[in-house]
Length: 492
Ligand code: CTP
Image (cartoon, rainbow, N blue to C red; front, side):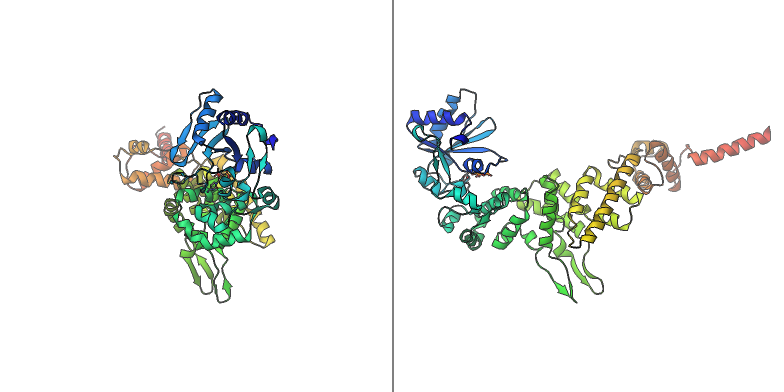
């Protein structure tokens, strides 16, 4: 395994360990990802020292002879620093369970094998020696390498024990199975189902980290199916669980919205790495259970699920500890608008419908189109083809209209001040009325999106609602000019 140790940091650690007469090993994700030939998103290197991990980390930082900041977490017995692209974390080998976020202080020191058996999965419990006489030697007491080959997730100890040490590991098992497309062995999976309720004691922040990693996988539906199947979903994300199930009345059945949603999530994951767009896919139909109604003669309806769903987003974000910022607003907006491209495609691609869509979606129009396209999960090939063709038309028209009318980032072409000046009025509701009328006229295509046409329209609209101005709209001006000319002609 020497070829895994190309990074110069390993030689430095090895020399320090030798000098301090302790043994040190690389463990966990680094070893796993090396064997998988996998580039991790957050590369870190975990070093286990049979001895005092913090002490060795201090000495290693000194030996690097660069200005490196060492962060020490006394309670966890860990220390870490940034070295090039890597976060290097040191910990003393321990007899008790490894828990990065545990608040319990570490008491008992152990051997490397003690340490390995208290880790989460066999594929994460492999180590490589950094010691002079065994440098590069592979230490794999639980056959992690074999499990990597077999593509399975298995706990090193009896699973109930491993999961009771840290119930978050149940979610981690599903996360790794999803990311790596591995299978969780039956014994481990049964234990997750049995212990699922224990996830309640884990902090929401830690749960969210794993959930987001599942969502960012190539095929997230795998993870969501496992979450549902093991019972974890009902504890960590009950709103999504509620989408499950079908009902039949008068021989009419609606689709299972849980499976539909995770299919949409898979579809969108082929098109984007944007976590928030993926969240929009997860939440697009979230209000279907609340809005479900059977109307005789019509069938199942989910009236206003787009609107009600977007109103549910802030509560869900708060409960899951997602950020309550512009990302949330973006998800809300996409949930609210998710049906619009489909209805535009179905009801005819008119210029004004396209202008309204551009106006409402703004810069997020592309993402909205991506979401809407992913929402087509029909099994009928013919139907899918016709939808996609219509979407092509919508996209084409969006381009044309935006080039012509520039309504995507609509700015009122006439300002409030200009309206006040033209009619010599103070701030009042009339300004809002006129501004809105101008916007509507542009979106409907009555006038173009330019200052001249909007100003003209303002003069007409103002008069209509009883405002007075000395300026005359062009049409009126033209008329009076003709009259003037006529009068002049008579005189002459
Ligand atoms: N670990 C564990 N139990 C946990 C968390 C972590 O046993 N609840 C151990 C595993 O051996 C894991 C190592 O700590 O490999 C490092 O954890 P972490 O950095 O969270 O995960 P990685 O395996 O490095 O994977 P990734 O980088 O994809 O998160």
